[in-house]
Image (cartoon, rainbow, N blue to C red; front, side, top):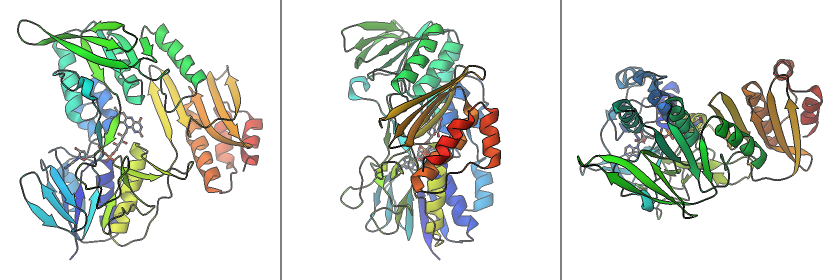
Length: 426
Ligand SMILES: Cc1cc2nc3c(=O)[nH]c(=O)nc-3n(C[C@H](O)[C@H](O)[C@H](O)COP(=O)(O)OP(=O)(O)OC[C@H]3O[C@@H](n4cnc5c(N)ncnc54)[C@H](O)[C@@H]3O)c2cc1C
């Protein structure tokens, strides 16, 4: 009987296990996880901290016992993998054990990146894991805080800023980039969001490097606050510091001489790495970006699920492919919705549509007669259809909206003329 290993048990690892079993494959499967928790959804961590989600809500696939019963596997929990020898297909754990496998999936995800200038801080927070969420929630419940600095104006940073703002804490959102959502929003849209943040009492400090932070300790040895230094020479005094500076793919267990690694583990459409029998899926890997034709990490929940399923089916011997994805972000925060579809660095003619009655703003960038990206403010209802449309266009597939899609787009306030234009763009 074949013997598989899944290293890392988040969204990608879970979907791989499920897909392997759903093909009827009876291989023995060892699952290595550095925690004793079931797979969790990192994007729900801020909801838990905000008290809007119970602890159990962080685990969308149930308990390990439930998962084990349904998709039988050996769970090696609280077992950190130290090294994967891709040539020998060996998994080595921190306790010195080694096991050989027929096939291995690397689904180790990503971890919060803390630059060296912040690495000595004892009490600053990140937001990625369940432990991060529990730690911040406990801290906020301990005493009232007046102010906080959130470094990193990304999708994660804004969710942290939101939950602190909702608690009545004065937030300064800081980023080296000149605008919020630098990797997803067009400058005009960022400016609109920033104006709204300021109206909500959130200060912004953009376009300046955050060079470091000094921790202040009280007479009991507890961290009482920070002085945060900005590149322009200014400083911000704050009680609470949360760092959401970015993530790094967790690839340290692999040897770049054995397996191709760029920013993540490079995979093909079957989620195979350059090492035979070794697969990768989720935030640790670099799959195809349909728009650029290059491989890129697209660190999104649904993407991790699709990649995990494709990897699982291929491991089980049922051929399957994921041709890739586009960069996209769909985020709800502070009573607004921001949707960014496509690479926001691509330039072209700008089409703007404002529907005051429905209260939304849409900006499309058109290049060579075709849309290459959309930013939408406050209209969640059209995002899925436009995203699917953009993907179909990039695949060269027929781009007609179904009558149901047209109905939905109309209901949500998009004009017929724009739909006709999008259909003709192919
Ligand atoms: C606050 C926040 C908000 C987000 N918002 C969104 C959003 O709005 N939309 C969206 O699509 N995505 C969002 N994301 C991203 C999304 O959560 C990730 O893309 C997705 O969870 C990736 O799943 P994964 O299985 O690849 O990795 P992970 O969930 O990181 O799972 C990897 C697992 O592997 C374990 N592991 C790592 N190394 C080892 C080792 N050496 N040995 C054993 N185990 C190991 C890790 O501990 C972890 O449990 C957000 C993320 C965060 C943090």
